[in-house]
Amino acid sequence: MISIEIIDRKHCVALSEIISTDTELAKYLHGPDGEIKRVSEYEFFETCKKWEHKKGGYCYVVLLNGDPIGTVSYAPLKDNAEAAGVGFYIASPYWGKGYGTKLLKEMIDILKHKGYKYVTGSVPKGNIAPKRVFEKCGAEFKEDKSRYYPIIRLQ
Ligand SMILES: CC(C)(COP(=O)(O)OP(=O)(O)OC[C@H]1O[C@@H](n2cnc3c(N)ncnc32)[C@H](O)[C@@H]1OP(=O)(O)O)[C@@H](O)C(=O)NCCC(=O)NCCS
Image (cartoon, rainbow, N blue to C red):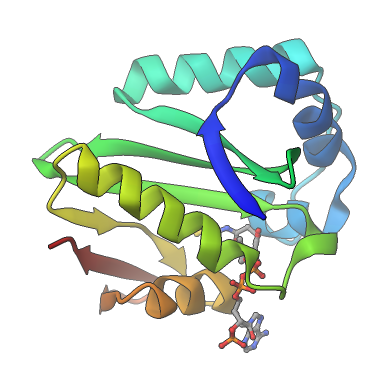
């Protein structure tokens, strides 16, 4: 079962291990030539908190039967406070099992309850999986040369 909750220090041992060792995931987070580097649980938590403070957003852990397998975060858009921009990842051994779609649906429910009208994101054109995840959650897309910009309207 997939669930999400606000990241706590206790999740950061597992999350920092994923981010420090998952070379498949690193290709999407840092680009094909991006270097993977070891991140401590302390650094991981501090980075989340700094990001939240800077963006006015929140970082959630993605749990599979209670175990951390990834994160999803959101922040209100600077130019449209009715819209939340989201980003997410899960560890590569868990790809292709529907978990990405489940975590975004969970996030969408939370954002609906918080009163947001739109959910959006930014997906590089070479990255098919998140585009498909947004599509399965009802997104329409704008695009430019290099990226898709999904828009999900919340009822
Ligand atoms: C994005 C991510 C969370 C998706 O997680 P997931 O659990 O694999 O997602 P799902 O299983 O719910 O759905 C993935 C969909 O993409 C499709 N897909 C994935 N790779 C594909 C490819 N190369 N070609 C065609 N379809 C592909 C899958 O078939 C599936 O669609 P389907 O259900 O219609 O068959 C995961 O791939 C990830 O962490 N990627 C790296 C980080 C990242 O790119 N984050 C987004 C940044 S914008």
